[in-house]
Length: 159
Ligand SMILES: Nc1c(NC[C@H](O)[C@H](O)[C@H](O)CO)[nH]c(=O)[nH]c1=O
Ligand SMILES: CC(=O)[C@@H](O)COP(=O)(O)O
Image (tube, rainbow, N blue to C red):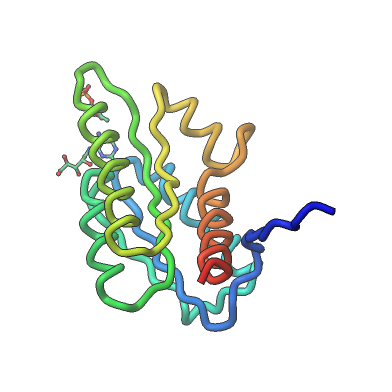
């Protein structure tokens, strides 16, 4: 008879009273607004109360890590969702903005111990952004919200 292993996984139902913070970049807001609407809708559908939701708008993706860090430190949230849209231009600027955003958000998660879902589009064209903001490739805001819900439950299960 083999020994059974411990299996830990996170469901998608929000634990009662769990609080979620969303940081969202205003740059390319015709896309980030769609990501935000889908993230909020997903959280609501999975049991998050309106009063347990905080949304903070930052200028752009580059500022999301600091906004996330401050929100994490405030003690007001159990998980964070970062949303934004970085679209490649003609210069290397994209790599700095997208790279620092991703690195910074990862650092906030590891530093704070809170889940930080990465719902920032890093795309080569406006078409690619539209496809990922509620059209043919789904909505990355909704995906990020699900990831945050799963991680809150997984971390609770890990203890
Ligand atoms: N080009 C994009 C930016 N750039 C702005 C930066 O995020 C930042 O706000 C600025 O450099 C001031 O510090 N932001 C995006 O979110 N998306 C872009 O495509
Ligand atoms: C994401 C970007 O960096 C972009 O908006 C900047 O475009 P460009 O490289 O053409 O200045």
